Length: 230
Image (cartoon, rainbow, N blue to C red):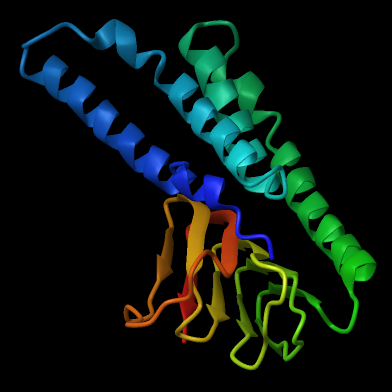
């Protein structure tokens, strides 16, 4: 069974994003209190968000690419504006690229579902302006692709089992929510990239957790939430 012990030592994109917010706060505090002139450093803040996006790509093994690529694209445009290479209007004209990226995430999710669907080991769910609830009871669960836009998607894995750990779920939530229900004893690693959203494991701490990682949840959330519950 593949436990991927080395990946557990890497900081998640959530941790990196939190550290980045703290760093920006320190830079702003130094400027506002007059302790040190940091205004020139602030124009390079977008480059830090680009690094977060790249890190999210790497730590997910390039399985989660839509959210990080959106973050990299937006931060790159912001950086070019800050350095005076382009105007805000020129960057705004490229907003349809976000729709293209979101559409690609849906298409690729359906493709993975078709290619990897062996004994219902892979689940794909898409919810837009509504809700969808799915249950997977496979004893060979491998992963899922869940997308919610202005709606909610729920996947129930309480009767599923993973024989080759870890299983992987990619969750994308835009103005919506994704909820994954798992057995309490599963060891779940959250590596969802939240931008004005939240990604949480809401289960009580297990007194007898499994060794290693059973499930890795990656993805991207903006103005919504991704949660793991039991």
